[in-house]
Length: 424
Image (cartoon, rainbow, N blue to C red; front, side, top):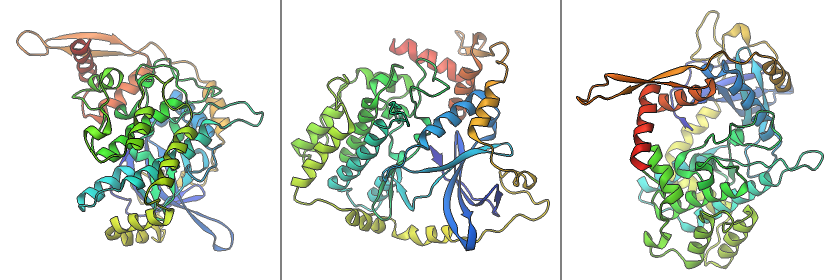
């Protein structure tokens, strides 16, 4: 979701929080290491996820973000990153969440590879079991009246699976989860998440349930155990086609020493027909735990902790310095890198319900915007254009994807159309 970037030169106040270090920037948000102070010198290290300025101006996005963040804030489980606060300070919408001292799996596996250390199969299975436990809790969550919230994570990927240096596994970013009772319903057929880890039903824009997350976890675990990414392609359309129509080879095809029981777990999780898949995360966790309990070595959190510390021994000291960094407020008139101006920091966070109420009163957008799509002529030059009419929300989604790939929206639409014709 995020790419490491340089930190601010100075720290500053953000409402009741102190922003210590900007640690990442993604397409949707900036991520800050922050500190919350209390009485008698009490301090708590947290993470602030602040929505990017261009999205903060989009009423439909803000409304969706707040509703889904409110939903995620109800989740309180040892294997899920806890959300403490959400709202608005100045012009910035934010989430305050638990800080985890560790690394996500997108960094752990490559780090082991770079050191020539094979990532142990039993550690991968233990991590997957913990993910199942967190997912099962979320999938079964009900409201105060006992009504199912029908939460689906929708983005189970290596970067959203975090392992702390004490060996605890956490699932993060339920911020794009969807529940049946959320105020802002996702547009029918709209696809979210990262393509290579989507379930077939997610690719086809179908109504999702908990089984979609289990397919995604199967894709992740397959990658950890074999070292091969399951679904790839030279375009987004090709990846989607691979997920929905491509053959899934048994993991022993790539790695012959994978036990039959583990292969059976993977292949059941990766059933394209969700009726044949694991029906709950508990079922998948049970099979994983049964295998681990009978294996020659069953790892504990301490084993996982020691292994992780061994991998990242060269980075631990720098990480501790970052956490212990002293907050240095910005001086008068001093510009802080991408931080809300000081005069706005004393405002109390606005309640999410109040913000949503205000957004609901906004008038609908005017006429749908149009995108000019270049069309190459016989001589190879883009000497013709097509005019494509889109809703404001559709254009916003396309613009986000285009920025990620450093291209214009028009070029993106053209490439998608060409890819569709190729694979239709």
